[in-house]
Each structure stands twice: as C-alpha cells, then as structure tokens.
Image 1 (tube, rainbow, N blue to C red):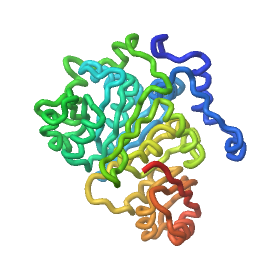
Image 2: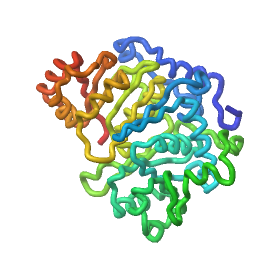
Image 3: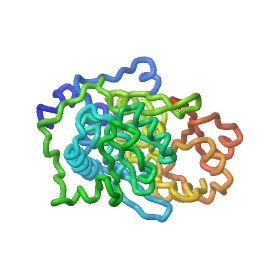
Image 4: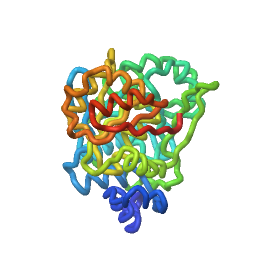
Length: 362
C-alpha cells in the first residue's frame, strides 16, 4: 500500500494481530479487552487485501445457488476483482464520501462492489431486494444517494427514480444491459479488460476510523425506516461477533442465512468472518425455499459454524437430522427472536450441538 492510502507500521502490526485471531480465552477477554484502532483504517485494504498478500490462495467465499451452480473466490480474487470494480466506479464519478445504494441478491457482485466502494471511501447502503419503487424513492432522497446498483430482475423497480430523486446521478446493473444504465459486465471488458490494480491509486484519500462507511435503514416498523450510519471502525467491532459468538478460527467455513440487504449479513457474512480469516458460505435463494435444503449443503461443504433465525431452525428439525454427516459442524447460533427449548432439544439430539442465541439492532 502506498503512502497516500496506506497505514503506519504500527497499524499494520495491529492488523496482523487482528487477522491472526490470536485472542486469549473468553473470560480474560471479557475482563480486559480493547480493540486498538489505528490512525487510518479501511476494511477492504487492511483486512481483505492484507489476507490476499499473506496467502494468495486463501479461500474467502463459496457461492452456490438452488440450481447447484458453484463459484469459489480467494482473498486474492476479492482484492483484484474489487480493484476492477473500483476503477469502473471511479470512471463514473464515485469518490470519497459519495453515497451508493446497493440492492443485490446473494451474489458475489455484492461483496466485490461493496469492497470497491470501501476502497474509494464511498458510503454504501445495502437494500433488500423486496423494496418497492416507493421504498427506493424514500431511501434515496433521505440518504442523498448518488448511485444505485442492482440486477436486471430489480432494475424495473427503478424506472422513474431519476425524475423523483434529484441526487441520483448514476444507475448500474451488474448482470446485463439496460437502456440508460451502466452495465458492469460491459465495462469490465470495454474497450479492453479493466485494470486489476487501482489506476488512480495515488489519488485516493485515506479513510479515518471515524469516516462514514455504511448506512443501514431500520425495518420501518414505526413510521418510515430510519438511517443509521456506521463508521469505518464498525468492521472491527465484529471481531467479537465472529470470534466469540460464531466461535470462528482461521480456515473455518461459516454459513449465516441472511439476505444481503439486512444488517445480519454484516454480522454473519462479511466483516468479522474475514477479520478472522474464515471463509463465508453463501446460498443464493431465489425461488421457492424449503429450509431442509440447507442440511445437505452443511454436509457437502463441511460447514464448521452455522447461524440462522429460529423460524428456519423450527423447519430444520422436521427432517431426520441423524441422516446427515455433521462431523465438521461444531458451533450453532440463532438470532432474530427467542428460540423455544423444544427446538434446542431436538437439534441437540440430532447434531449433538447446542444453539447459542444472540440479539442485535433490528
């Protein structure tokens, strides 16, 4: 990393300590734990790229869908692919402090493009794909968003946004061509394959831990959804989430069942897991879903730690759990609502594992 956006030797050593996850036992951490935050911090550079430089073959993400298609990405892949995406975003005027709404299903482009936005110092807001045009207009105007990124399936919801959202300057679609939209696949190869290193690297401004990074909207159960802004250091808070609630170690494979538009995805499919050096498992659910289809995936991929809401656990215990090989699975979590004791009992009988409950921001 150059002097322009890099960190000091001290913070680099701190980052090395974080990603080693060489934390003492829980009792000691609970009584005397602090996260040292360096003068400058950027999750994309200082965690993801740091892992890539430490081990270019280290697994970062496994993606599969209901059709059985599969893709695997190393940290090196995430580094270079996010560099490509950052170069495209720079071309279309996205810079430090600009706000971008990202409404994507559980596809690898969600992680690639949000890492790219972090590298630019831009602020991104994940949005559930269930949002309507009315919901999008409200959010874009409330947050003064400059760009929206989505896929072809959800692009029609964005018709008319430009007329109702004065701040919206750019729209990008990640999987095809739509009139009036930036095509991410097209830009990757036009007029030649986009550079895999940051073209304007030396012009990027370093991010402070207190710089904004991420916006979540609350669920809107009382009136309109409210914006909650999280700063760059937010990613470091999830060291606790991943290391102690998910019980993650380097080389684990963690599976959290959550849509990318919700905060639960940040807790279980992003920050803490990659700080720990664990890989993320992503199951792209689009069509009709039966919870029991998760069980063969846990077995096939050797998931080591697992988290899903109580609703799904209640569906999973309908299956004969003893039919599956859960020998790699060692830790299970739940969040979203209280889990009744009967479900915990049946799950333990079938897997020999307890379920650890947690709660957080709605």
